[in-house]
Length: 205
Image (tube, rainbow, N blue to C red; front, side, top):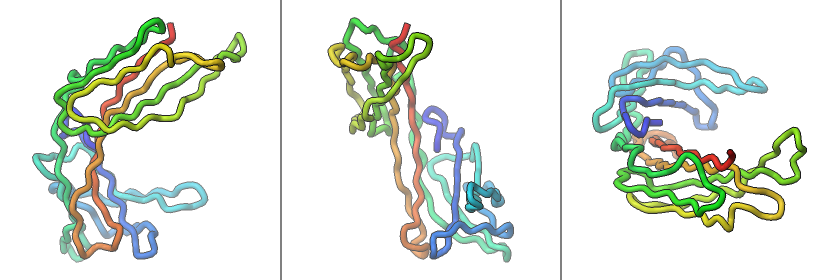
């Protein structure tokens, strides 16, 4: 995951698996990303499942993340690489933090370099909620393919129905891109990079 506005702020997770899909946990094997070396982080999940992996943060990067495997004999093998994403500016997204129940809602964006998908999650307050508590639910999530510039509009006629009234909207501008892996790795091996910009709108007073 790369911070959308600062590619030097990143979080990298590498998981090694054997040919049966099981995670490999070997304290003698390390991962190197752009010259930064990391040892295995041993972790046991529920029902004794193996959730071990390699975790790195804030790895220096210019154009590419290069991932290598270092074996106990000190030999180094390439696992793959993926291009860093261009840095975005959240200011290129115009979105009010508060919605007006009496007006159509509109959001716009321009000059986005990477983002190609927008997810829209609308939360609702149920009208049958008890007086002393509030019960919420979500409408089905919308996934919209987007370009570098565009608009999103929600008509006020859609804010309310027989059972609920809109309480908020969460927008996620996001992208995920695959890189190139060493062809000698097991089938299904992959390397990818992603980022997102989140915007929230509150319709409750």
